[in-house]
Length: 117
Length: 505
Image (cartoon, rainbow over all chains, first blue to last red):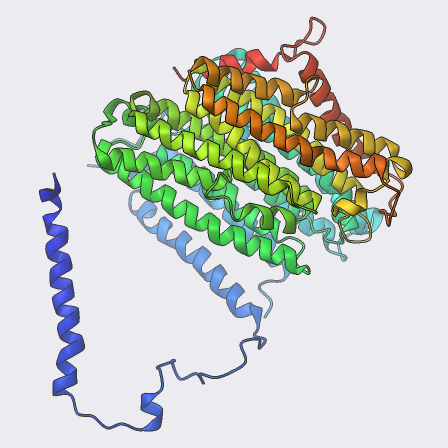
């Protein structure tokens, strides 16, 4: 029974070889110029040592959440639109049931002022 | 060119309670936005402290409607499957019983919250929406007959409760509670999902009936999958060794939320686990019963012994709820129709006594805080004799003294265990029960035999809180004396539980 999973093992081994090769080859091949900033841990251009208790605008978070919600909604709408004819009224009502809670959520956050920057 | 449109006959009666709760949650959410905004014309006549009342009333209507539909389904005795071609949600007697327990628990929690939210100054209407949403998730989970709908229900019930636990967001305790519950809860969801994946992988089915048919007790992956599912639910019902989150979460969350989740989450998880039990345990090897045996003993021992040293009533009740989870697990070890119906009856009984005990704590809350240390109850019999008497009744019932519903529930469980031949397990459970009498009676001892210290300045009681306590006192006494109802009042909880389990065979 375990033989069925041999593909997984092969994938694992190949992945290990490729990742290991990528991590080791550059040590021998790449040129090395060391200076202060390059030796610091990579942090997307942020300064590494700051107070962890600083304030940041919660709106970034809110907007990100709203984006995800409506992004996922759009994701569901595309295949539904492509198969609209085949799904018929059943598909139509199913989508209505899916959309109404989203509209309620949108109304809620709108009235709460989440969309005002 | 195009194939004919899909035609599926759906039976909407099967999802009626779930849909009612979900729609109610959305209605309450919108109502809150319109009521709580100072600019709207509706806000002025009712004022901020009544917003809680109006929304609580809306939630009450919703839950009563959901419970009524479930009760009708129960009385008619039929089985409604939402989509007969691909059964995912099924409203049968078993599901209707679970929905009833969950719904009544939510209803009592709503009534407890109406004044309590104002008292704690966390009077935001989202509270009721979250509570209803999580209730609809529980209703989905107890009527689920497919791994996917079980998991969906579990997530819908869990996520609002994570938020509710941290609802008192200015308090550090409450934040800690939400964080802890969220982290451990998501971990449990992961394990549960892993178990479900193994079950699906080895049996090729996601529906419980298919899994039951294809269940191969000789395959370690299948048994492991079932084991992981049990672990996932053990987290939710706070069974040892997956109980570490319980005391902190129960203590930190607002008391009305604690009352809600201690009763309903446990009920929903145990009822769903019963469905799994019926699907898999029938063919399960002996050692899985042994695993449950060990779980039950460990839960009873740790829950009851640790509760002894607690000085905070909420925390003590949290450990006691761990102990009760252990008692309920005995019904699973017995693995007989008697054991399973005893589990259902225990959940029903636990509803009244535990919500009642937390209800007394809620009724004592004053000036934005709970009076939940054991010293706060010293001499309460002199200042608040009624509340003290009621609290004593709930403590006696939780301890399992005859004449209360707690005794009947424990008796049913122990009788089923003895009948199935688990005498030692019963002996250990009775010993645990004896220990529990000590810490439960500490509260009445403080109330009746100590001089009043600094007690809660609260003097009056809100009507809704009184209603909850009255319901719970009635439940504890009536089902304690007449678990099978009387002629004039045919509330035969015992036969309800038996009828529900009959379907699982």
